[in-house]
Length: 262
Image 1 (cartoon, helix red, strand yellow):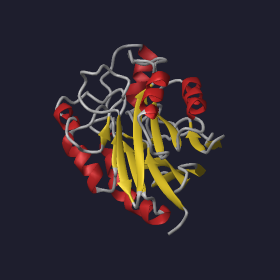
Image 2 (cartoon, rainbow, N blue to C red):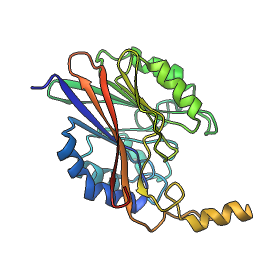
Image 3 (cartoon, helix red, strand yellow):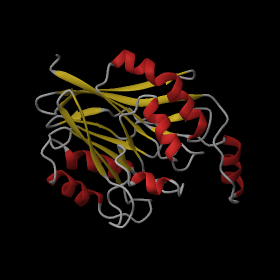
């Protein structure tokens, strides 16, 4: 057995084009990279906002070992009861205690117990508790050194700060939410893989996955518009992280962009 294992993480799945890209491309990516764990952010997978139980099950069927969410976690009411099951799905942890679901889970394979955490940022976002304090609280509950954080946040400064906050304490810290893949992947001191945003799984010929003409009209007129997912082919964006089995330290991180428009 190799001394390393890999984590494959896919960015925000946006609507039907994103789901189709995952359905058609995830197996190929798994065949190429041979990840031990595959994690998918599904918070935009139902029509661009939220997720449903059926879509979550679809993502598991196509190869996801765990699903992370974000600020649209509860846009579909039917997800509430599903989040109370033992399914490997996490919503932002820095929410009130009465909110359904969990902000941290563990998934296990080949003797590796990987903790999957999800928190939301506060800059330009809705009202969330302090994500830095919440991450500290979650880390204090863990014995496993294999720790993966999906930080769903808007501001690049807040994401970078979270990377440094977790440096040496997390296997990986990846940013989601802004849907545009950044080119700053790195290994921080102490073996923490980091990227500010992994990008999205969705239609590239769009504005962050939404129909570009609708968004242009919004910007040009300032009038409210009903956003719709662009009816365009989708691509997969994400990262592959190589990790030491015995320490949980990341040794490499690679951006991926896969699909028709890649």
